[in-house]
Picture 1 (cartoon, helix red, strand yellow):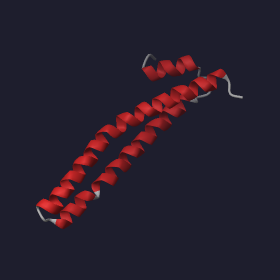
Picture 2 (cartoon, one colour):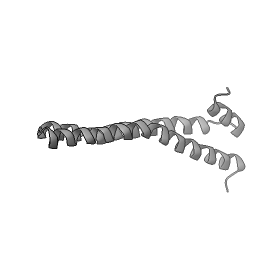
Picture 3 (tube, helix red, strand yellow):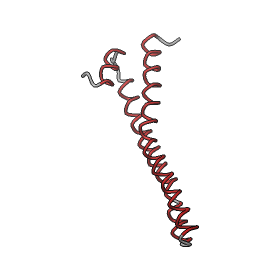
Picture 4 (spheres, one colour):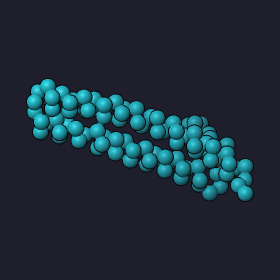
Amino acid sequence: MASKQELGAERVSGTQAQDVGEQALGPALLASAASVGLSLYYYFVRGDRERGIFVGLWPPTILAFASYFNQRRMREQLEMITQPGSTIKNTIDSMMGNN
């Protein structure tokens, strides 16, 4: 059975992971949507099909980079939480920038 410290760390990490995901994906979703719009413009309005297809390949790349940086930030936070000898109070203080 998990101790109170482990359960508290799980709740903190879950909340932090959700916050990190929202921060990282906001600009990436906006850039991806803009890229899709630009791609449709080039493909249908301007008639430049090659450029439209090229620009249409940007959204998956943008989202992949956002996902990578999101996972990297979550891993750093998880490592910070699970350091040996850390208490929940110290973990929360360090996450809030009080240290």
